[in-house]
Length: 279
Image (tube, rainbow, N blue to C red; front, side, top):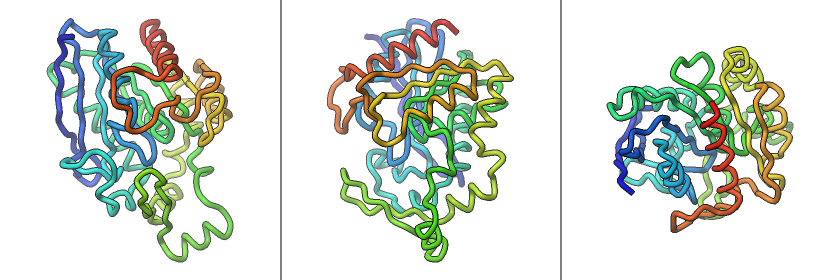
């Protein structure tokens, strides 16, 4: 297949350079997707490269980014070599990053004329919803196994009190064997920006703007319950698709290794393609 592949970067939160890549069909693509990974994720995790290739085959350009404080670097965009940056991440920084990546698309000669669809997985779903609000470049929004509330993702009671007292907590990454630090910055940022980081209100705003939205979730998601997408669909007046038997990553694992999509992720891709085509 004759595609143009671009390996580049964008300037994200705190003027931090972060990795970006684009796969652009040379046969006059009609749309462009911007894909945003989730928590403890990165743009080349699992089958995301295969998902990018799938949409290029459908003549849709596909851009993937690493969020600026996801723990990766320009030189090492896979996994988490920069745990200090990871520890200082916030939801506001992620929204800033997504808007910056949209601006990168609009500055790219091959892409700037195309309508933009945002796709976000898990926590990335929250980011694309918040970034799409009142953004004139966003044509439609798709969430994959997205959260519906930021506040509900934080510790409560004694764990929250301990976090506030120490200023840091650690989460074990079972795949990389890292103890990943999370500073209290992310919680304080949320408390200070509750209005702008309210996912429910952002969904309602997008519904008022008549921005098409699609929410996809697996019936066996062990990390983010299906009820999250049910809420998002209600608030956004968007469509919802439930994939029976699918887990949080739609049966994708890391490393993936080829360009064949797992059946459950392929079903999600089919739903997305149909949605983009119809809108």
